[in-house]
Length: 506
Image: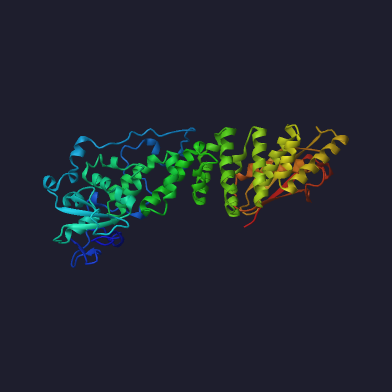
């Protein structure tokens, strides 16, 4: 790549130190003969270790307190359209006066030259840019470069090194020199959205840990601009692994905080990797936001998940996300909002051929309540027939007929009271619900409503990640959703016990 070859590729495990570093004819770095590794390095010379990532120990002096990432419970949801007010940093007059690499050689007393060759150019090309630099600036101090420290320790009569860079990165080399020459407290001003990717490359290639810290500190704030977030996600895998790891760590947290500003039809949603999107939903569920959210906010999250799943064909992704979206996501108060969102979920399941036992029960219950509360127009019924799986449409139709038939022979207000015990077949945990009222004339509707209630109560009680199924028995008789409640043997109030086995399949 240059006169020092690919120094960064050979020194990631042994950062160059003092005079104990040697460079062979190919530019490969290593310890000089007889030299020993020094374990007592200065703090400013400490290597930036990838195994420490992600970590909150990275210096981000001046960051707002709201950017401190702690537990999931401390997530602070940002309002829709939120922007983080950050004052743009600039180099002061004293820092500008230190940019002596911009001066003529004679005035700046330069003692080394760097020839930057853009990709595709010949090293002998006269158009290659030559920069007059100073070894003491590049190889010493808190921002020193391990690459140049090793290079300058090698004797060279030419005092010139050639560096090959891509055109985009080569164009930002002056920003790198400005960073190295300016005062440490102001040098981060050279890192911005236009330069961060090149600066991350320079930090990795020239072994400048302090620059890596400043790049990460800039990204940490700039991610709150969702227009920029997409660029950070697309860069994963194409930049230094240290910075990539921090992006993977920070992006889900920022997306959780900014969830109300992410739109279902946005290109940002398309760019989020599945593992990261699952992490966002999992963190969101643990944060407590959904429990206190309005129906509109909760519905917005549903829209994002459905919009995300609409673009993929991986059933395992649907299954993972539906499990992560615990029933608390579905606790709507508005029947109309819940019914329309249930139609969206059922449409997705029918169109993709995906199945989820508990999700089908919950959505069917929401849809049933919605249909009972609305005028059954031709458009609404046409949507139900087209978008809802056939078996659910058939059950709803059967329920409607049974309800009308039962209403002729019994009063709808007549109910039976039951006690319910729920046992988890894997953990053995039990849950009891007393005095559950079920319509005496109802069949499938009542039992399905009971199942939905049990699911909503028990999913928050036992973490569910595998397929589930509920088996309801009354006095040893399986309640199979096909007969009215009144057909089951009734003895006394104490005997009215519905035993439910919560089966979880591995």
